[in-house]
Length: 112
Length: 111
Image (cartoon, rainbow over all chains, first blue to last red; front, side, top):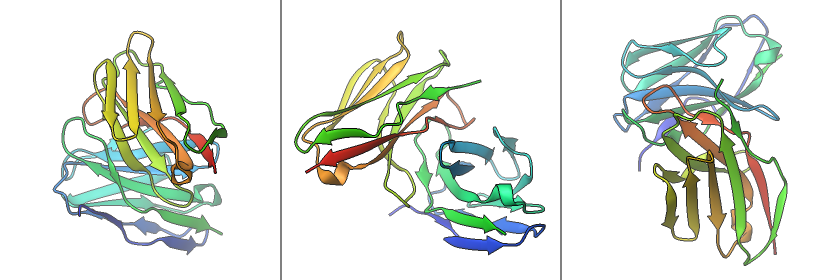
C-alpha cells in the first residue's frame, strides 16, 4: 500500500525553537506539498516541490522554509516557532502532472 | 486569487437517502477537480476525481462537473452513517502548482 509518512503525530514546542517536520513518501512521486489546516480556514498551501532541490512558495510561506534533498523526503522548517503556527500540518504527494494527492496522517503542532 | 466555495453545513441527511454536496470555483482555467473525505482527527482521503464535463460514477458516489457554470458536485447514494464526515472540494488549474481546497461541508447521516 502506498504511503506518505510524517515523522510525528503530535509535537509540542516552545516559542522561538527551530522545528523540523519530516515527510517521506514511498511512491516515487515527483510532487510534494505542505499544507496547514485550521478550523474555519481550511487547508492552506505553505510550500510545494516538483523536483529534488526545487521549491515553490504557496499561499502562506511566511515563517516557514522547506528542504528537498532527496526525491522521497520533503521537510518543513519553522525557523523560529510562534504561537500562531500552532496547527495541523499535512504533507501530501502526487505524480507529475495532474493527479490527486495522497496525504500523510498529519502532525498536530502546538507552540507554547 | 483562486477560490473554492462550499457550504460549511452541517448537512443532515437520513440514512438511505441521497446526499448532495456542491462546490463552486472562481478560476475558469481550472482543469481538474477532486473530492476528499476527512473524518474527524484524520487526514483527507481522495474519493473522486473528475476532469471533463458530465457525470462520473464510482460505486455509491457520483461526481458531476459543469465547467460553463463553474461548479462541481458530489452525490452519495444510499447514504450510510459511515459517510458522516467533512467533504472537501479541491481544484487544480493543471500542472504542479498545488490544489486549492474549499473549507469543506460537514455531512451528518442520521440513522
